[in-house]
Length: 229
Length: 229
DNA sequence: CGACCATTTGATATGGATCAAGCGATGTGG
DNA sequence: CCACATCGCTTGATCCATATCAAATGGTCG
Image (cartoon, rainbow over all chains, first blue to last red; front, side, top):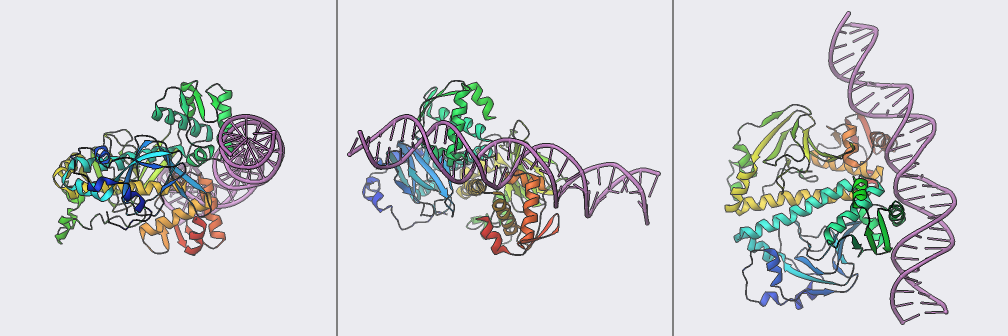
């Protein structure tokens, strides 16, 4: 399943990643493996980290900033698979190629780990093997939840999205939206107009307050939970 | 949706497994553990194999018949995560509990393997660990594909569904639908009426022929592929 | 200030849902 | 063996949530 591959764009990764030359450290945890890869890579806003179909040679962990993963259909429709916040790991594939593309939404610092290295380590270290499995499993769980979202109506989707984001960014009731309305729309399977109208309508029922376009105050979580059902 | 594999015949979990090098013992894959349980379990039509939220103590492999996995929302809306055909493995979870329910669509014979046994074996046999990871990974891949489906329109969804089913059952151009229109609808995020109308319309453009309600002839795969985009 | 982009708001269109019959198999009891 | 009930499917008529098209507003940066 894991192949070695010629690097596409990733050559530039290589130069800035000294980890291959570093003394090996014992890491009982994937995050540890990443830590030893040295300084995080820096991506400017809206930079592509990898594209759908490219060789999946690396695993990534967000340090700062936000990343979106997405796929585009032939006619341009886009499905945003998810948003990766600081601490999130992405880019793990079971095939040789990435199933989604990954792009920064804001300037990002990202740790990188070589896939083949992790696989090799997993062969002897069952803890690493287990961690890899768990990563895939958690991603599966996330997608299962998202699947359910997509059979709901617009207010339900938006309410669930806000609650999930608040949960993840754990910044209390005032949440910042690092992504555009278009990103949200493409994530929820709606249009920007519907997302916008729905937010307005949630505000009109006092469930939220639109501090600014990118900042939302959750006024009544209970109402949102009720709505998101 | 604990179900495995959509596209591609799913029997081959094999591949590079050491125990598979023993030609006379082809049931020694993960299924080897399954064989331990002796004769397959028999389930009558529409029997529940497990329910959402129940302890996920076993892994299952369909021998004959078809299983559907699903979730229901509070208000009764149902999402059918997938259909498990003979050879498919389902019920593998990363949490202690099943995320979906599983129910037979027809009378089924199903092999069972104890989860804890597999985990224990995975600790010493990294091939088993790898297989478990792969199972989760394939399920993830399947869900990613399904996610894309749900942003498409009705004809696209139905066409893609028919093609995928034909692919899996590999029975040529005449495919049997083991599931009801309601099952298909709940899988595709549509209503039975829309599924039915769409099939009729696909027939009217000569893409398919409705031999009977449960048997469909794919007349023009090219057209279906074009439609499913 | 002015250009640009993201977002909101408004007007209208439409795909699929919903409501309601009809139909065709399959099975049951007389 | 047939009349009839049942169930799953199809077809028709209408409705509605969301998409689409279009314009106004607001925020940001030169």
